[in-house]
Image 1 (cartoon, one colour):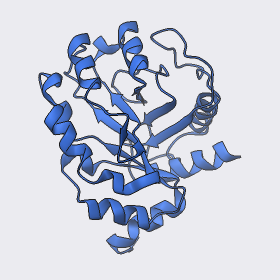
Image 2 (cartoon, one colour):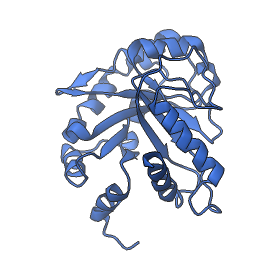
Image 3 (cartoon, helix red, strand yellow):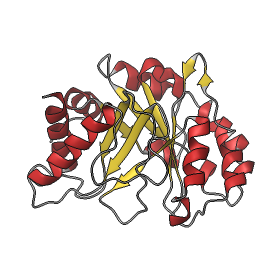
Length: 241
């Protein structure tokens, strides 16, 4: 408490290994901001970014090209090696249209300014619980985000060389955000994902992916926001232990 705003990131980066930037969903950031974030964090720190809502909150995704280009060229590559996955989040009302969704995936470049881009999609409508959707993402190497401990549709399939999960079940009554059982569950899930397996209790929609080691990006969001940092730090400590 009481830290100047400009030091909040520095403090958080000293406790966590990665954060998800939510502000990029709502508005553009300046290249100078991305460069400053890079400079204020440890060498191995990673930023996940939420893609602009103007790219995903539209009736026809195939028409998102100009918005996607505007977002990707806004300066985010100033993060350089600290640029993590990009979360393209869709509204709960957005349904799976195979042709239109593939048209959107074709708009996502694999590289920009010499930096490899890792794309992930967060879908929230039950129509996406389809083996065809899983096959489509695997064809483009795009991850489906596992949204857990919430009322949203949960899809736990591994569709990319990395795993992206957002858990939303922290509670004020739990000093560490989650109960011991909850902390154990997500620690184990992260470890299994990292080894290329499928965590117990997270059944995939499509056929299992090839078992191989993967980077895992696990973020604690929503729920009781005051408890989220404690939960994240506890999970980091346990996965390293």
